[in-house]
Length: 330
Image (cartoon, rainbow, N blue to C red):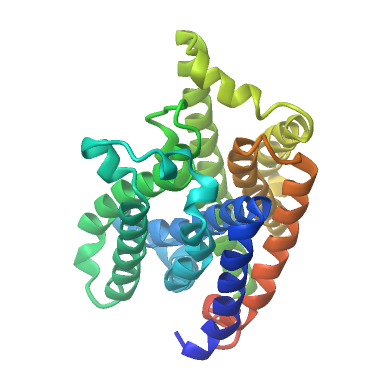
């Protein structure tokens, strides 16, 4: 990656980090946007690791796009810099100073070191995979474990009363779904003809995402866990209720119906589903994080989230050719 590509992202990250120290809503929105964009990049690396483990000539359709998405892994350090600088403004445990192992683990220094370790590990995997294909198996295990731990660190620990063993896997499934959608767009842009395969991959990714969401909700509902139920209740208030309907219909019902019809093999239909998936993926993960900051105005947080998403996409524009390839084709 050309160091020049990092200049403006570094400026934006430092600016958000410094301003977030004095304005907590900005720090909260910065964390939410970073968490959401990171899912796509981690999902690309996950796809790059998983595809070679399943034999078939279809690998060439999806693997180039997955590899291009994974090239952006080193940028995660900049995305997460504002949250690292403003930990005491975001995480309840940052100021508690507990004793013993919990106090060491839930400390700003340990949190920062773990985040840097995650990014370093994923960057090493993204760099080594094209050169050491035999690493896909162990690498996949390491990514699932570290990705789940990162999701717990970055977002689930915002609300210490909430606990879910599926949280990390659900985050990875969301990232994988978004990465599949972007890889499908790249394959279509490169002139891929086997659209039936691309349709099948999108269906499989949507079903995995739906299954994990359903399992988490079913376990919490059936066991009647008050603290975990509160996590859902805070996310179906106000604008959150509209997000739930958008995700249920726009990410669940309509894509499956459309993709299962013969119309689903058309290039326009696949592109529409893929673009919708990318947009709703960002929206969903903002919905995961922003309600944790109930002390701030929801309208302000969501507005900042939208503006920061656009800001990051603009400053990362020089890195887009890494995804599209030298000439936008793979």
